[in-house]
Length: 345
Image (cartoon, rainbow, N blue to C red; front, side):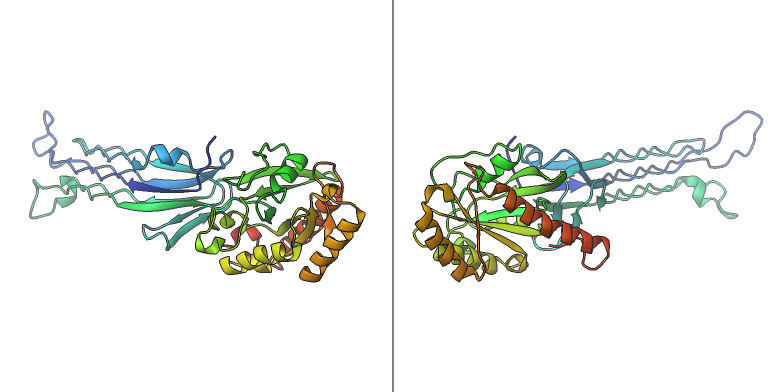
């Protein structure tokens, strides 16, 4: 399935049905009086977060959604039926914005959460509502009110517990494939990953969701390379796993480049807890390992973990380090000390 994390769609609610002008005509009833029913209400347009989706690809092929209008009122005081609603089903983590793509309408972070985007028009009154002591046979009824219409943007920010960041070819996709059932594209050239990938990690009978995004390069916040558009998918994570490849000549510069892009992007990414690992460590001998680990420690201010997804070295240590941070965050959220990370923009 193709990945799409942003889509622009048009929504329109249904018009209300018109009221009816009708009079009661029955044998032996001389003065029947008005009995025109009201029009039905137009259908609403809703957006709802559902399980089983992780892309907005459906909205590439259909961009217009219109609810049904309400039925007109009828005689014998019969009210018209309400128009059918339209529900836009989206993945959990979808944000809905106004046409300017800046004004947030709603943020759907839980399964089953829904929001009404456009309310259907009210149905018009039938002539029975206009009967009075001075007007016993009104011949007027109200038309239904028109529905609402608007253009909106759907923007997906995946909900994961941990996020992978690093330069291209830092081994992020290899690590994701080795610890989850995800099957990201892996190749020996930059920008192999073109869209985010999700996987479920199991360690010590516990689970967490890991997200992999395309690699960052210097100037990504200015649109260089793929840019930083996919960083939104790790905004909601509780911890970042920063991989620095052992193949880098200057691991300190590689670390500083990614940290600089996170800070330039903002939205609290630079302040998130971080687990640092020197990946692809199987490519180095003992002396080179110690030299690059020391250089990375000097740049980051803490010792990195040594990791090789290809051989399995250090994988469990990295996963347990991530799990500790995630468990602490979950405990704090359960105690009400900090807001749920899924609600953070």
